[in-house]
Image (cartoon, rainbow, N blue to C red):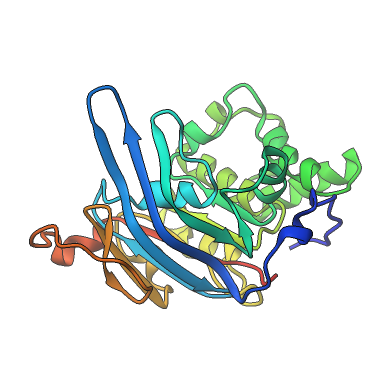
Length: 280
């Protein structure tokens, strides 16, 4: 997208393993623990994804898709969420062993997420320009003028007038806020992106345009979730989650019997696609 001038990586290269996998998840278990009960949100899933590939993770509401992806970024809300077991490696980095400073360096540059609801992921008291600029300032050595220029380019790329960078989230429509979320996720050209229904709030006429912009052919792939098949139609690999575990698909998975799978054709109702945008 733009020329890179990265800041220091907090020693990440020293602890990075050599691998051709963008994501390597083994025996991931995530639970939500409350005083009343313990819910197994993700139950022993294994997923492996090579660089410059796209994987679609599908399943009904409550199957554990979003929780599994939050675990990839080590962002499961705690309490009540707890990652009790498993190994999570992104681009050769063990996400469970990184320090807070290292996680800050990784999030945004190594891995980023387009959240499903931009109204809850955008800060209502900061301008949209400041929120996009924050990530750029953290990860790239640019002057304030250069950061402002980058913000303008990103907004223009997703169809938002750059002059509106000084406005607040409530001044935009739902579709426009979704575009802003996409621009923020792409701001530092992350090597891997998770997308949770990234175009669900956009008009059908511009969904394809936004998806193409977020996944130029030179980069390789993307990942999307929405109610319908539009977001996952370019995914070459699909994994289905049910009862918090993998039950079918092209990635290795530990499976368990949780009764008859009821969704059948309805599996397309909820999609979470994820993959690599840039090679390392």
